[in-house]
Length: 256
Image 1 (cartoon, rainbow, N blue to C red):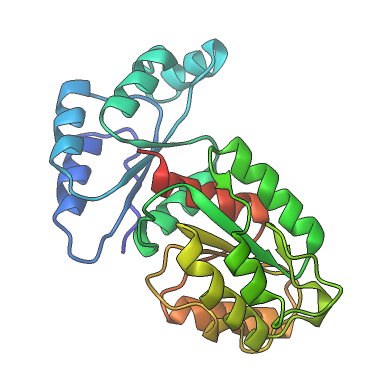
Image 2 (cartoon, helix red, strand yellow):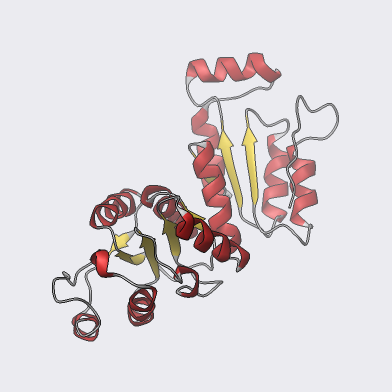
């Protein structure tokens, strides 16, 4: 809804902006890049009163980075352990990179919160499914085994050479219709899904309903991928460019 650059903060600061966007009808999540906080008690009061998720990328985490931040904007960067504790206590989502700041805010704004950490991974690229599995495990998500009832339901839908497991690799035979059948069958068995379109899949935008808890990864930049990604965005379905970024963004929904 907006981008605000505070610069050296002559009169307004991050707490004023938090108060403003907490009440803004067009804002669903708030992302902040901070080097230091002008008034920590006031900032934490603003966060406590904010009904929307807040994601912070705090620069100056190391001793030399902290020194650089203090010389940059004359802000008291402070020890990182203190910020980490305050962020956890006040349910502030912490991002480690600019990409994670963007991805986490997008996921928190557009995806519904899943009931738990059990995820299923559906992909047409086996390698991408492995990358998503690693990312999920490192982020504290549970790549749970497929229940036997689901395995039995999926076998008639999938090619005979497909290994029915989690991650579930649909292989190069995947179509939008196959994805849709698999997603509809798998969704009741998991808290959320990581759905990776590893090939050009015409009709991919029709597979996932808007407002779901599922992370969608669209690989590739050719015509079909560009068109389907734009169609998803128009429907309010966020997409992510790599398995790692999409899975990490999804993990923010279960962080607290």
